[in-house]
Image 1 (tube, rainbow, N blue to C red):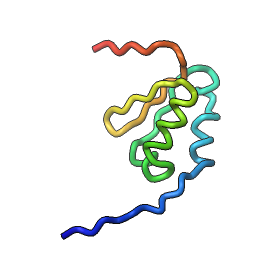
Image 2 (cartoon, rainbow, N blue to C red):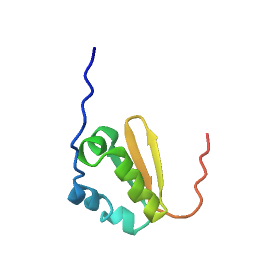
Image 3 (cartoon, one colour):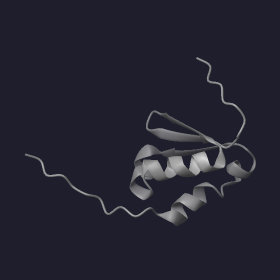
Image 4 (cartoon, helix red, strand yellow):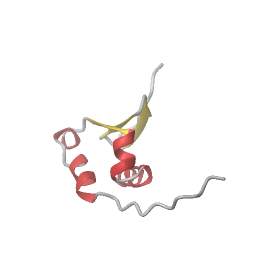
Length: 78
């Protein structure tokens, strides 16, 4: 039987703040971070909370989070 591990994970707020002070954010561009890094540093939920608070869009693909730093509608074409 596998034991359940509870995490005492405390988000790395300076790491998170660095994402949203990038030049790409200020110019309405995109920011990309590895899912593994996000989960280690701040956790998926914390990143999603920050993206939503700004009205940005978050895409997950191929082990990467892509943050579209615009509040306008997002359309994905295949």
